[in-house]
Length: 288
Image (cartoon, rainbow, N blue to C red; front, side, top):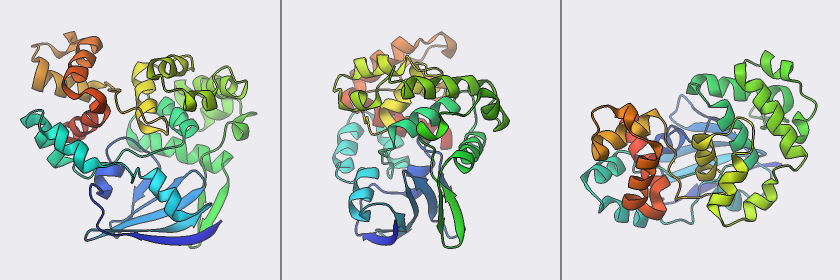
C-alpha cells in the first residue's frame, strides 16, 4: 500500500457530482474544496477536477493507473454512447445534457450486493451511515493524511457476525438479509466468481434473485453498477416509473404502469444502453 497520484488530462464525460451523486455509489463524500473522497476495494482516494483535468491521489494497493482506469470505466467511449442515445428523442437529449459527466463505476461485486440490499426502502444519508458503521466495525483500517478510513468488510470478515450485531448498526429489517446473504455466499450457494464469468445476463439475474434481500430492482442495480457491468438492464424505482410514465407511457394513474411495460418500452427505445439511459433520466428527473 503506497501513496500514489495521477493526472488524467482532457478527460471527457467525467463530472464529479454526476458520477458520485447519481445514486450508484455510497462511499464517496464531497469535501470543502469541491473534491470527493472515498474508499473502494482496498484503496482510499481523493478525486479533484481542475478544468478538463482530473487529479486523483491517495493510498492504492496496486498501480494507480490500472486501478483508476478500471474503476472509472475509462476505456469506454461515453461520448459515442451519448451521441447515439441523444438521437433517440428530445427528452433523452435533455437528460444527457444535464448528466453529461456520468460514468458507471466498476464497483466490487460483493460490496455492491450488500450496499444495495442496505439501500432497500432507505434514503442516501442513512445508507451511507450504515455502510460506514459496518466498515468501521468489521473492515480493515487504512490511515492516510492523519485520518482513518475503513475498507468494506469481506464476506469472510462478516462470517461470525450475528443478526443482533447487524441490528445494533441500525440495519432494521435488513439485518437478517445481510446475515443470510453472507452465509449463502460463504457456502457458495451463490458463486460470485462463476457469476462474474457468465455472459448470460438473465442467468446471472436469476442467481442474484436467490440472495436474501435481493428483489428485481436491487438485482438490476447490482448488474449495472458492479463489475458485472450489464448495460442492457433497466432498474426501476419510483423516480424511474414516474419519468418513464410522464415522458413516454402517459398513463393518468402512474401506479397502474407495470414494470413489464416500462422494461419493454426501455428495451425498444434504448436497447443495449438501457442502463445508461436510465441513469440519465433518473438523475435528471430527481435532481432537476
